Length: 309
Image (cartoon, rainbow, N blue to C red; front, top):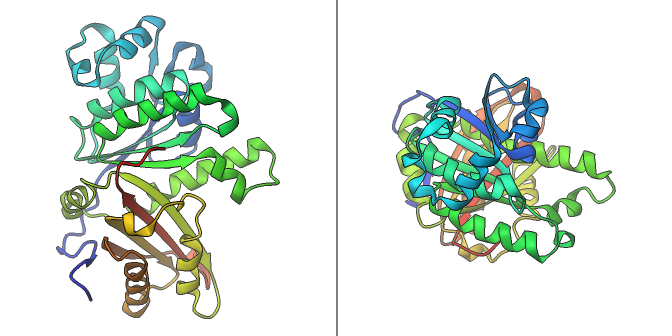
C-alpha cells in the first residue's frame, strides 16, 4: 500500500481510550440522551427538567451565561466561583471527549468554545460535532453559527459539521421531529465507530494528521451483495455533507464494519478511498459486528481546511 495509507492500531496496542460524550444545550443533550457512553449534560437551569436522567450535569444560571458570553475561552479557567467548579466536576476526565451541540442559538454558540477549551485540559483528544442552522432560520443565526464555529475550531482537535439543510436531502419526506432523530443517529455514528477502532497509540497520530484539517465531514454507506464494500464506499461519498472538492481533503479516517472483515476487504476499501482523496493521508480500520449480516458499512471522516460553514 501507499505510505499515505496507514492502518489504525498498527502499533500493536489493543488498549482502547476511555470515551465520554458531552451534550451542550438542548440540541446537544438530545443527541447524547440515549448514548451507551458515559454522558454529561451542560445546559441552562430552565432546561433542568429535560436532563433530569443525566447523572453528570451542569446547569448554567443567567449569570453563568453572561460570563461565558463575555469571557474568552482562554480565560475561562481563571473564572472563580461555582461556574468553574461546576463545569470541572461535571465533565471529569476521559481520553477522548466528544462534544455535541447546535450552533446559531444561545447556549451552543456561546458555551461550546469554552467547554472545548476546558476539555482539552482533561482529555487527550477533543472532537466536537455541530449541527448548523437551516437557511430559512435567517442570516443572524447563520452569522452567529459561523463566528462560533471559528472559535470551536480553535479550541478543538476536530470539528465535525452537519448542515441542517443537507438533512432534508436524506430525509425529505420525514416529519421534522423524526428527521432530527435521524440526524442524532448520524451524528453519534463516528463515536461508535472510533470507540471500537482507535487505540491509545493512535490518538497522537490522528491529532497530528488532522492538525491542519480540523474541519471534518462525515460520509456513511451501507451495502450488501456483490462488490458490497465498493458500493458502500460509493454511497459514503454521495453524502450530502461531501459538498466540497475532494482534493481539499488532507486527512481521512475510514472504518469498515461487517460480520467478517478480512485483509482483502480492508485493502480494497482503503485503496478506493485513497484514489478518491489524492491529497489525503488515509488511516483505516475494520471491526466485526454480527448484526451486519451480509452487509458492509463504511464510515469516512474527511478532514478539510478551515472553510466557512
